[in-house]
Length: 188
Image 1 (cartoon, rainbow, N blue to C red):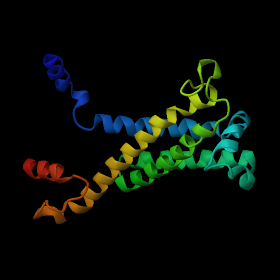
Image 2: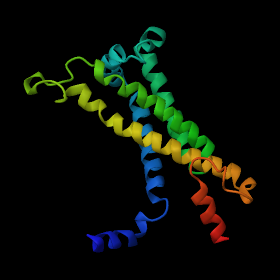
Image 3: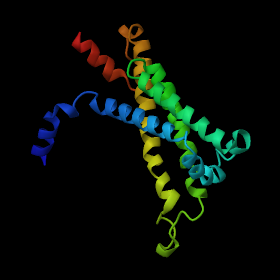
C-alpha cells in the first residue's frame, strides 16, 4: 500500500491546485448547461413539481409565472457560473459565485424531503429513492463542491488581502492560512 501511495504522490496532476481548478472548471460547465436548458418549454414543464414542493422556491411561480421562474433560474445560473469562472483570476468574484452556488443548491436540496413519490414503496420507502428525488441527489454533491469553492476562494481572497500586512506575525492569520504564509516566506 505504501508503494501505491508513493507512486500516486509522484503524479503531477495530483500536485498543486489541479483539483481546485478542475472543480472550478466543472462548476462553470455545469452552470452553463443548467442555465441553458432553462430557456426551453420542456424544462419549464419539468420544473413545476420542484417549484410546487420546494420550501425555498415555492413562491417563484406566483411572482414570475412558471416560464419567468425558469428564466430567473437560468439567468441566476449563468451569473453564478460567470462569477465562478471569474474566480480563476479574481478570488473575490469567485467567492460571490460560490455563495450563489451554495444558495442555489440549498434551494434544491431542501426539496428532497418534500417531493411526493420520491421513495420506492416497493422497496420499503426511504432510503430507496426514485424519480425526482434520485435526480436531486446530485445536488448534495454539488452543494459540497460549492462549499469547497467558497472556502478555498475565501481563504485565497483573504490571504491576498493580508499577505502584505502579515509580514511580521502569523499569529492572527485567519482561516488556517499560517502554513500557506509560512510556505510563501520559505520560497522567497
